Amino acid sequence: NMPKGTHSHKVRVSGDIMLTNREVLSAKNARGETPPDDFHGGLGIYDVSNPAKPKLITLWQTDDQPGVEYARGVHRFDFDGRYAYISPTMDGYLGNIVMILDLKDPAKPQEVGRWWMPGQHIAGGEQPAWRGAAHKCHHPLRYGNRLYTSYWHGGFVILDIDDMSKPKFVSGLDWSPPFPWPTHTALRIPFKIRNRDFLVVSDEDVVRLPDCPPHNSAFLWLVDITDEKHPAVVSSFQLEDIPPEQQPYATGCHQPCEKVTGTEIPVAWFAHGLRIIDIANPHAMKEVAWFVPDVPQGSERVQSNDVTVDDRGLMYLLDRVRGLHILERI
Image (cartoon, rainbow, N blue to C red; front, side, top):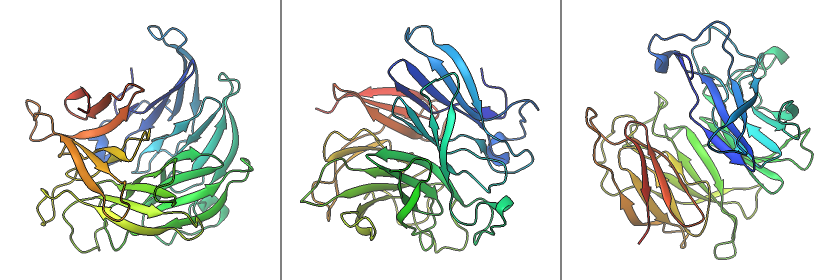
């Protein structure tokens, strides 16, 4: 069990190893609850060779920064069975950074390399050009020798990890401002569409920048990365049934399914449930299917948070309030 003021809400499994995040909630989200003094964020590493009886191997801990208002620990991450690509808070840095851990021996994770946006390394004398922890790593996703990394109000960055000990910046895009929402996911499409390479990029409908013009809610972007040093937006997609006026937080886009099986991308769209967006025409993304669960008892609206798909094509839609729906495309 996780203590009050913390959560462990992200899971990755590869082979017999399961990783879970461990994170101290931000002051705003903790709602007055505080974790024990000896609690540290990081990763829980488990043996799941018997899935019915997970066994804790070890807890990898971040350098926590007590007293800060933002979350600390590890938020979201990727895992390929050997390396974990994580978003930890570390002492001396402002907000989450990128880190690669080697889990060859799961009982003794070893840091391989790290990367941060210039301005984050306060202990190294850097000074941020932004307020607070607005520019921070949300999570990296590995594809080949690249990490496609969402960086909250810093947009997204592409990192070269040919040398994992020294990740190198390739390029990035940041549209916040003028758009007010933070970037949640930069998802590499693992095949060409019309002979071009693309990223699906989602913004999360939370924590708007205060100085931006009002917009209704966060949406989805498609970015051409054929020339990866010069990424270019080719289209965006917003639901037609969202009113044009600014909406409450957690109304719009959140997370695309990170397992890509074709041009139809399932997307968790907060208060609008599951939306399946076809990107076959990169210049004209379109919705081809949707599912909105009933509003849970005691709640005012749906909060579809995450979605994934298995090898049979079944989709698993997780709601922050209600729980899990298992869906099939027919």
